[in-house]
Image (tube, helix red, strand yellow):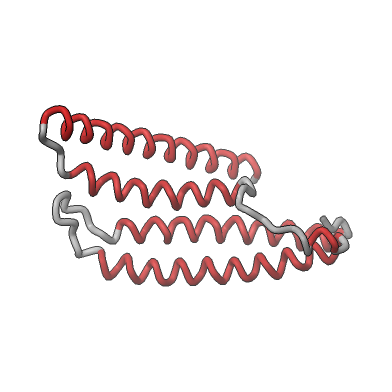
Length: 160
């Protein structure tokens, strides 16, 4: 199971690198064309915007999977290991509910905006909302796995 998670993490990292590379090239070429030759490729702005949204959401999934988000531990440091695990279950349940809200609202927006096409590229504008559906789903899966691990460790008496 852990090797599958590592494989998915490496695939997400590679996708983020690919998106960032393509986005950088598109923007750089457009800047050179605009200032050097007084012309531009108009589609690059829209495509770069789509890529940036996807990069932000996929980066959030990567940051969550590696526990890189900001955490305030003033209260949790004062708790016992069992209390810390119970508090983690409560906060994970709250985050799982937030993931559900993100997925639900983003899916509705994805469906509503799927037929709205971007003016220059012609890409469906719902694609931007699909990024949050996928990110919310992946983070939700990570939360469920973390909750399962916490429950198993509480059952064995190995509270963290």
